[in-house]
Image (cartoon, rainbow, N blue to C red):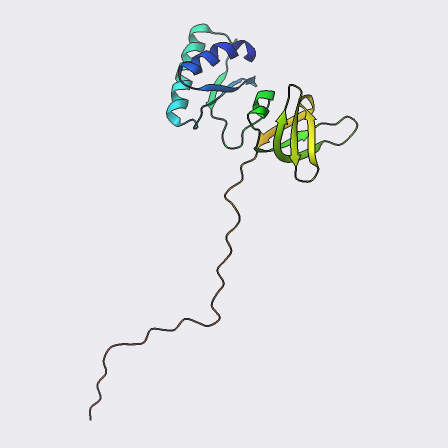
Length: 173
């Protein structure tokens, strides 16, 4: 069902200067994820929500009750399609790989390449690893906050000098 919506929603969003990043209909929610070079702000999301909602009301492509959720991919965005992985080349991702007759493997590394069937990561522990898309249980980009932690300034060994009372004193003499 969601795939039937992809073409018209992609065109609607394009008219707003936005790209359709992801589309999913699950558990009574139509999730539409939009993106744009330079990021998506609240104004873009509001326009997209209004435009999509009006189109859905006019065309009624989904039977029954559902909720429309329009959002941006965010800093840590979900990767579901080969195009998502291709757009993440050079970024750090984490993924869970399903392996036949073996335990599920969690990988984290930089995406160094993709093709029609797989993604290749430079994993911190395993080095270069290629995973077939059909074996990716779930994946997302990883946002790293800031850089290295700043060192704590060391305390002086002696206490700072105390200010002296500078008010004049007089002695009677």
